[in-house]
Image (cartoon, rainbow, N blue to C red; front, side, top):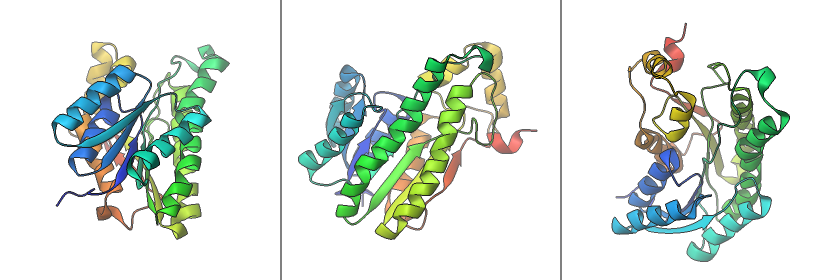
Amino acid sequence: MRRLSGKVAIVTGASAGIGRATAKRFASEGAMVVASARRQSELQSLLAEIEALGGVAAMLAGDVSNEDYAHSLVETAYSKFGALDIAFNNAGTLGEAGPSETVSQHGFEQAIAVNLTASFLAARAQIPRMIAGGGGSMIFTSTIVGSSFGFPGTAAYAASKSGIIGLVQTLATEYGPRNVRVNAILPGAIETSMYHAMNDTADKEAFMINMSALKRLGRPEELAAAALFLASDDSTFVTGTAMLVDGGATITRT
């Protein structure tokens, strides 16, 4: 039996990497997926892939940091498929990188807007529909950077992604009584375009691989498997957690 049969899921940041892999995995497990990203052409190719595999999906391109767009995503899920059971709020940006004294206020605020404010706006739009349907699962993508692993040059990224953990814990306590579970995934070094933007030299890549207990990069599909666990009924007593999916990077750090 497919683990998300009959469920309706929103996946943001679905044009590439972790979001794309998760949208495809959710659809393969029976979910009706509303895929979100800025790039419409990439969403169209994702929908074609999902439909070729026998899945069901819709799409809505836009900016997750826009409040109206957050509500439009929820209404798209409801108008297309009649419910909202799962939300994987995964869209994010590295933001302006570099030594903290060189990071501009605009660059810092942009990372906060896309990574943290957008997460709050998504939750505020999604929760009423989930409650109306009897509950649901909300999942947010944070990171080990800034939570248990400091990484130079990532002040904006780390601050915005760390804030997600506090948001998740608060939402979990507020809406647990209404059967809405809220969790975060904390990826380590996953082979995505964002990873390559952060690790653009051979020395940096070697460092990232070596810090993993598994001595390799993670794959987006491995993050999708973790998201599936949190989205499914396999995790009905899991809420408010920050799940490490980091290949053991945090335990090998000295």
